[in-house]
Image (cartoon, rainbow, N blue to C red; front, side):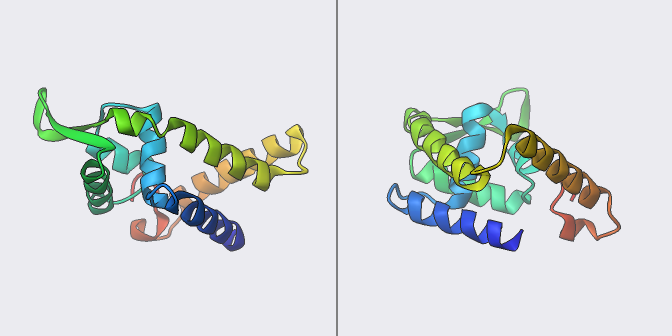
Length: 143
């Protein structure tokens, strides 16, 4: 798993560098393309990052013109994050990067093998979330 993580991180760093993005920004943009106008805390929870990381990354996306943040009119303590036109324009790039990664990672695996792999990985995530490891080590939704 370490090698896969290294490969993905290295591919993202090299591929996104051309467009001035980081792998963390990629994750957030990808998420926001699927869930636009989302509470900042929900983004952190769904991406399994702490609030400080989410705040910094969202701030970077705002400064680069990819997103805007506004107070939630229903809850003045919360912020909603929305993609700008520039942020939405990253959709083809995000799709290309995801497609290339999936093609590289899943090459030679049958549809059945791919389904089995995804099922096993999902169970591993569930296992670690239920584990006795301290919450700070689990990186899970409840961490």
